[in-house]
Length: 431
Ligand SMILES: O=C(O)[C@H]1O[C@H](OP(=O)(O)OP(=O)(O)OC[C@H]2O[C@@H](n3ccc(=O)[nH]c3=O)[C@H](O)[C@@H]2O)[C@H](O)[C@@H](O)[C@@H]1O
Image (cartoon, rainbow, N blue to C red; front, side):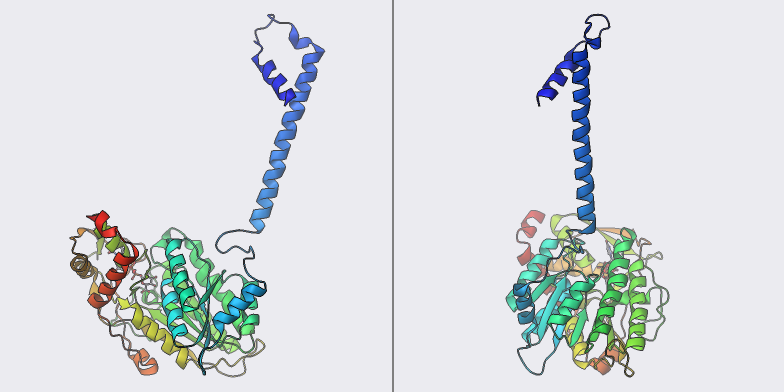
């Protein structure tokens, strides 16, 4: 400190040549040397600290999918086992990935309610408001479902979960969702929907006994297919978004794990699922928010000025389809990573079979919210959207007994009731 003071004093000395003859004094030279030394020491410490910080945190990320170990220990294992315990025999013991997500929360609660053992897994990423995920987690805790905080890319964690719990089924719902966001963050789709998916299948195929595997594909795999309604037999080789392409890739990858390792696998193609506790990135959700705020809402129309429509499917119907898929899943046939015989491989559409134009969805919301929307009709951007979706559900009906019962107005009424309750004041501030 003393040296620094002296240095700052030196800095104050006018540099006019000849005014002072101090430059050549040995005392000043010594001071300059000390000054140089102290600066060198300070900068070196900064540099070392920076490298240490970088090395430490780059190898141990502390958010989201990081490998910082937030799991393990006797207390954690007790919570894991308790959550996965069966409450009625016979029953399923299910690992639900993406449990704090929209569909994951509903499916987990429904399984738990009927006495199945359920363990949740979620990385609580920030794709949309993590507070909503935390609120869903509270709901799950109340229902007796523990959500392990971790990522499907973390093999050590997955192996540990299978060590602690003899899962009979995996309900895989963790994914990077959203068709338009893929233009902004392509790597997160590859990371979750491809790399994470393979990682989970790897652990499942090596587990003994192997669990039966049910997972969420998407209606978006039909892409530019124009034959309606979409049947499982229709072509799915023209995806319109990277999201759709990663889900389609998932279906192919699933087939190889079924074929090589004897994993029993069921893929469910969900059609625009909506309802209470939904995803804020979806149109019905942010339309509600913006209508209440008096903000204009963009309604896409097709290039021929035709309407854009979706086969909106209510969450309770989807949950029934998921549970039926789990209940009818046959056992995997492999063991020790080897196939012992042919295993079940299925793909089902889970839709509502009655597409509704987006403009009509907005009219229903206006009626339920009692607020007029500021509609802004725009051409559908070429960033992943398709003009319409329409599910043929006869296969799911035949094999799963799937029969959706909720029309869009009834489902949206339940959503709006939840929304106004969850975001109190949203109506007032909207005016
Ligand atoms: O069924 C599916 O496979 C997919 O359903 C939804 O995708 P999407 O149908 O595009 O749902 P939204 O993003 O909520 O859009 C619904 C409709 O509103 C339209 N939209 C969206 C946004 C907007 O600003 N304006 C607008 O008119 C879209 O074109 C679409 O027709 C989900 O976001 C996907 O994760 C899911 O996999």
